[in-house]
Length: 91
Image (tube, rainbow, N blue to C red):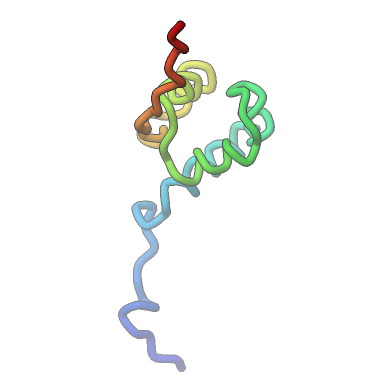
């Protein structure tokens, strides 16, 4: 018989699952891939993977996930700080 320490005897709960795993599971359940999102977001699949993993993205992608794909509010990525675009050239 093996004695269990407190660490190895921890009870599994859904709160212990990182958010990006929950987002990935939701995507898989709904047949949504990084490639499909990349086409819709006009990004690379690698960038979509970063968004899903980091849990942050610009508001326009959050709106698409919520409104078009019906991703639940509790697993949507947080809004990231958007970088300003290039300044217009002065003549």
